Image 1 (tube, one colour):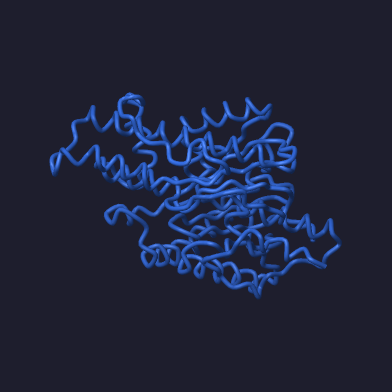
Image 2 (cartoon, rainbow, N blue to C red; image 1 turned 45 degrees about the vertical axis):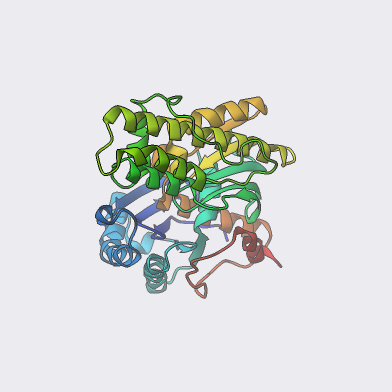
Length: 356
């Protein structure tokens, strides 16, 4: 199925409520995103609060996004939404809203795997000069994920390794909380780290130098806790907090660089090293990954900072890629109205939708 009109995409898998409208060629006609701030006082996302916020926000957000693109609902050729993985309450809200709109308009509904959307985001027009050809290595690093994926084609992914405990973004958030910073912790910790000395504290580099490309961050988090313990309930001096933040950020970057280098060696002919997810916005990490890519004779690419975190543009692009692949294989037009929201949806299952 090749779309002949704009596609409306919806993202609601966690605490970002987003809508976007993409032309059939992937051009972004309009996009809107609301980052829910009601979770800050709890130090993390509260699923029930997130679901209720999506329910309240989506109708108006979709209407405003259409207005921004100077379109009416009747102009929409298809509707797509993240169906999983993610927080089930948010997925139910976004999926049912998208399905209801598709039914009302008599348009097809396209179910999108949230992780696949991250994986394909580097192929958005204009992100990588000359385009991101398959196969490429994806480092997906966010609050809920940290894994290396061989992206071999639309619907074809191999998981080379992943975290055995905390995700990278989860570790950033937990350490930021220890340092007395706000939530989400990643951006606040990166800002504080810019004031500190990354060599001030000798922190461990879990799994660095080991075979494979699995990750571990819980020991690093524990090491930070031990450094803070002598201060008891007293606030950390600003200089100490900054040095800890810088040392932690450097340790994470060293570990990730080592693991990604191993992952590249596990692939046959990667064309590119790509990072996606919220942690991919970290400038120190980007610099280290650029070095890794250069050592392997590759380019490093990442979506623009605004598209690293959860957004509807990547959801819309994944839907377009899926439609194009189905058309290339001569499959019937897609309509995923029977798909149900899934808190877990392994990428290994994505090839099933293209089986004849």
